[in-house]
Amino acid sequence: MQRYREDKIDRVRELAMQVLQKIHVESAYANVALAQTLRDTQLAERDRRFLTELVYGVTKAGGSLDYMIGQYVADIRKAQPAIRELLRLGFYQIFVMDRVPPSAACNTAVELAKKHGRRGADSFVNGVLRAALRAPERAALPTGRDARALALRSWHPAWMVERWMRAYGYERTEALCLCNNTSAPLSVRVNTLRMNRSALMEQFVVAGAEARASQWVPDGIVLHAHGALDDLPPLRAGLAQVQDESSMLVAHVLGAEPGMTVIDACAAPGGKTTHIAQRMENRGRILAFDIYEEKIRRIEQNARRLGISIIEAEMRDAREIGAAYEAMADRVLVDAPCSGLGVLRRKPDARWKKSASDRKTLPPIQRAILASAARAVKSGGVLVYSTCTMEECENAAVVQDFLRAHPHFTLEQTGAFLPEQKTAEPMVQIMPETDGPDGFFIARMRRT
Image (tube, rainbow, N blue to C red; front, top):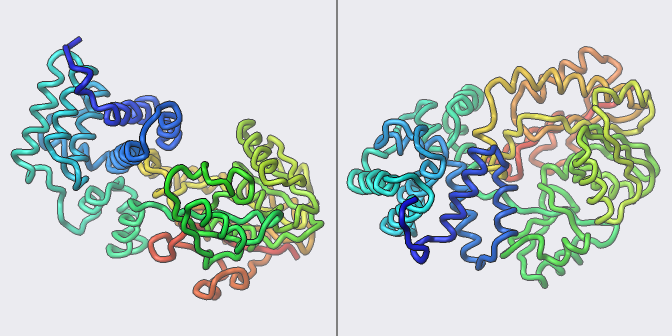
């Protein structure tokens, strides 16, 4: 092991390197790995923010950073995992962040390479970063309007950008990609079983957060909070639930009423399930299903925190619902497993974990779940299908295939449940770069 001076080790950058290794070597989820590190370490708020920016920034920019590093290194994949992350951190600080002195980015990386790398690793890291500082033009990303150039500039996989350019054109795709690199809005749903929106907004303001009423849903609040969200008393007290505005729309479109029987086919982690319960005034019955035991526990925990008692959470494959609950429910929600391309800004590692083949593997699963869940809808009942993606093959195409195969279901307008700018659409598609909330698709159908 090489000699290093502990007093020269930058603790925050070392933690960032370790979290990134968990993400890229152990396939940990970025938000989970970072949250665990933040819980286990005593860092000042400024250092917590810096660590978060490093981890999420490097994770989002992953492929583009490797392209830049590749202009100075033959094959970064041959480097030790720790050294790969140190180079990525170095390039991110030098070329993306505007407030970190290049010398600090370089020197701290070299010291960490001494501690965590094999003999000579510090010289290697120093050489690469110094070369980048001497000739930064070599790291310039391509400026063309082709998909590969836009993908590199916007930190997205090329296949994803190619697909969006075919669907939306260059300008809209560029706007979507840039939106995915911004911070997602923070919104919460009022627990209307315990408090109204105006009173809760006052509580958030007293707790030190900025709060404004959602323009999309009557029980939503958009927050700007400093510090850890979990520390806000209204959330700890079960007066609110973190949930995006577009996700909140689903319960409104479903239109469940007190006393009804409702099935939530793919319920975890329970945000929409508990929202439905609130809309039902905690009267009636909600059957909530998921295939993982841990996710069932999360649904139950959320319900307890919010004071909800009508949810019955059970492990069950959504494709089995129809046979078990034939014509039993007044309302059925299928919030289907999907590619999740509408929430990429919330999950910095997700874009690199997605596959172009998802469009082949997911729609058959979605169609099977929807067909099974439809059997559980009573005559006159409502079936809602939703996803957090913008992919046509997972959204409108699935619904249209279903309607052709099930003529006893008819598509209903969603306009009565939506803000004015969306009222003309029978099936609603929310786009993050133009609408603001997460990318989401919702369709409402009634059984005749």
